[in-house]
Length: 276
Image 1 (tube, helix red, strand yellow):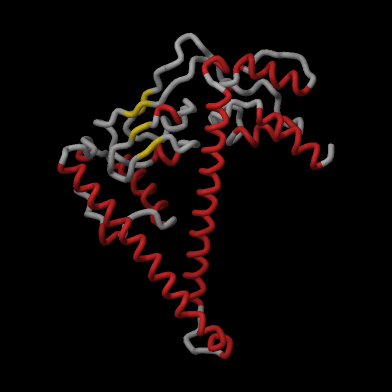
Image 2 (image 1 turned 180 degrees about the vertical axis):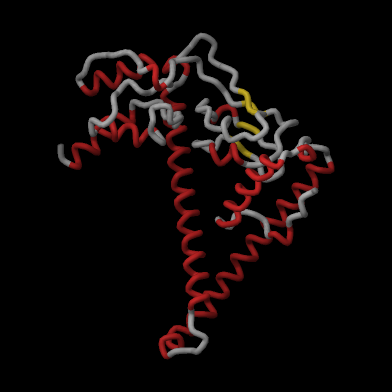
């Protein structure tokens, strides 16, 4: 099989998957699973959200017999919907980071909520939740598999997942660039070399751009602080922040550290100290 033939087959397989991005197939997303099937590295009966109909679709495409869904990957079931108990939520953002389709909205130390029409029922937000405040009730009655999920929903979930992956890639690249810039500055010689002098003319423009970027970020942080104060005044902040265990706080601290590395968190000086 040529590279072009492989890509075409992987594309066609991916088009038949439900795009819940649930990882139950054993792969990190629907696209890697499609590529594994195309390469003959994975079987075509490993997608519980697709169910029996999903196996039949793939079998028809591949010219292979219809086989039962592999129970090791899960069972066909009604589609669940993630629901957050907002009174128990501590605003740790771990569920937001786990959601593969950006169906959860919120902010650090603020209540989170699930956008019902965007949730794929993938379950991935449940394990990282340190306070077990996420439930997954079924919402499609007796309908399972593709009867509980439409092609338009699959297409929309695929688009959101792809946008999220692109955004995360940009954030990683930006974080790596900032780290490289810091290393270059710390390792740079104190004296000005001829090469430094030849490029110094570009420095003012770069400084202006960086100052503008910092001003934009600072303005956004200020808006976020004002919004946080407004919510707190209305009593709409998290209600469970006073009884956080050491283990839970460690998870929150780790999440905040990742956000700071990506330039997404407030400055330490602007963050109120933790209560003992």
